[in-house]
Length: 162
Ligand code: ADP
Image 1: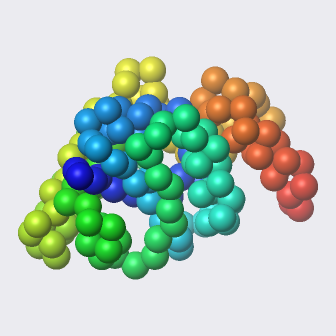
Image 2: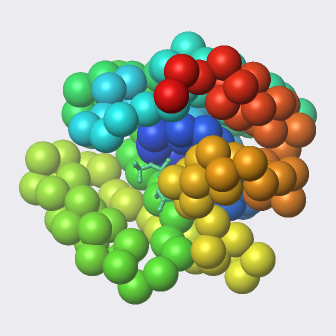
Image 3: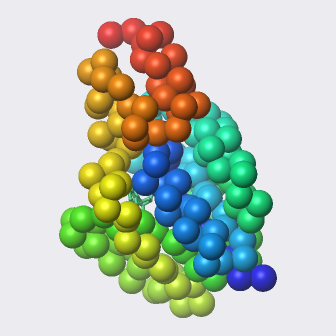
């Protein structure tokens, strides 16, 4: 079985992530969307919430699993028997980071390769940061995220203390 891991923060998951995950599921036998536990950035949603949202919006894809992880991505891949890491590329600035990460991955785990899928044109601008900024400013994010994520954002931002 050809297993790939698609790691990220997914705070929250948006249509650009979903597009990459679905396309990866068409290429690999099994895709594990791996939600990174404690990234070095401030989070709006905790790990459990981020996992639950990804699970809900990709529930219809039978060869996608969702899991949280901590520590090194390569260790998680080894644990799950995955030899490929999938990442999405939007703009040139993503390339530099992913390139660096890919070389680091090869250094740490030569048996694991990284595959980058180019964003679909309609999601080229989309990031979790943009989604949160629009939601925070009171705008609608319904064209950027599925309904359950939109509802979670509304609920979180309504109950937020300034
Ligand atoms: P990270 O903090 O690891 O970058 P993200 O949740 O921001 O986590 O993104 C996870 C992966 O999804 C990354 O490879 C990122 O480049 C990719 N990605 C994010 N937004 C998009 C998009 N709009 N189109 C394609 N790929 C994307």
